[in-house]
Image (cartoon, rainbow, N blue to C red; front, side, top):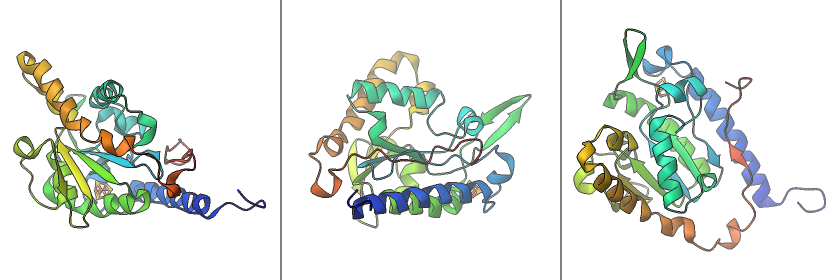
Length: 233
Ligand code: SF4
């Protein structure tokens, strides 16, 4: 802030924050695929507006759908555990999903997760692209096949392409690994090995977070977006 006026970087941050809030509202009203009509609300990304690293999951789960926040269910808690073990801070990550509404099927009173169809992920892709364009991360992490396909624009064989950086059509770096729900569902006998392999994959992204801030990024990035409240949902 200079002479009572926000510096150029601050103004950019503010306009990006506002734009992200508007995008979040727009996804909530979106009915471009059938998922919007059945979910409680859309679940938009959350984190520092100009985070260096954006983590992209598949879609909100039951808890995320109810709370309107990403990565707060069982898979999100496992991701938090990995973040802690890697010495990362969740406050420095922007987390979002490739698909913004929860897809499920009812079994009795339970809502069981269903993988989004390709056409649903494709319909939702422009929201993710708009989010990336505003956050401008230096690199992205794709958790699972739906996120990887959405980011790389092609089918991704996660098991053979995991643990490496790939490049998307815009030249952005994308690290591919499993979605944490795959570890929750996996063979209990392989649990420890799967956990270590997943941490190893994710650790490749530490270089993005560890870098010394460039001059354009030296200001504290206190602005977070968007964490919707009941009033904005
Ligand atoms: S899932 Fe995406 S494309 Fe489908 S209704 Fe929701 S925001 Fe729109």
